[in-house]
Length: 154
Length: 194
Image (cartoon, rainbow over all chains, first blue to last red; front, side):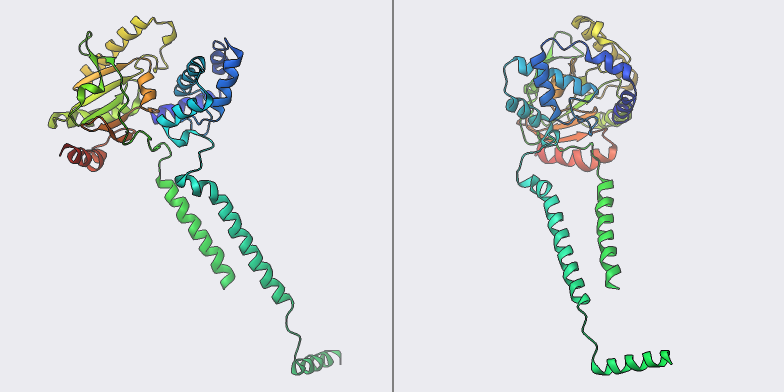
């Protein structure tokens, strides 16, 4: 199935004809369709994992879009529909997973990395500032430098 | 020296993380159904046309629910493992025939009536099992894949281990191999059967 779905994904990526065929029938109610698209854009297609449910042509995505339409028809709220999906496929289906202990690192990770980067930058700049303000030459060194300069001038 | 060591260390940390990432299968999404009651359903059986199957029939037993279909390539690879397993184990193995007809991209199922689709499902599923052996104690027919949605099926084959009280204890995505059977599924079954 994995290989098959991958092939289907790839095949569909390159076939405009298949897209045209699929889009036609369901547009009965524009409002329902609009809400369905809005909800399914928030959801990941589990077959082609980098596609949203709205954009995927995988069969499961079609089934789930039909399911969402049905639930909209039954008067379910957006939250109820999202909960329905999460109950079956886990937080992974949501492109914006909820904040909870298991996702703290996911949400906070980029900020942690940024904090680390800023700390490293500050440390680097401080060290460079110190090096730039290098100690002046001692008297002994002055004399040697002057002697060397004299040598090369003569 | 230090200015080389720090980037080198950072590089190795990155390599280690990426290497771990490579060993993980992105298709193996943890199921939220683990330790939740197996969703109820009532579906027609393959063998007896007038009988239904429902998970409630299995209460009191540890059992496996295996989602399959004849168009699924990985199921073909998995099937001999299941047949061999069924030959030497008494564990009930229930098959869920998932979108046997409409899941097959070679068939335009939109043109079929519900009755015709059910009939074709029976014919195709029976033929497949007759040809390759039937490891299942019962096969339930999920013609439209609606039950599959309730079980969070996103790529057949998938297998669920369900305990005596009807709780899902494990979900195995992808084909069962004799190794995964031995190392993951059977130890869990043994523990649940106590």
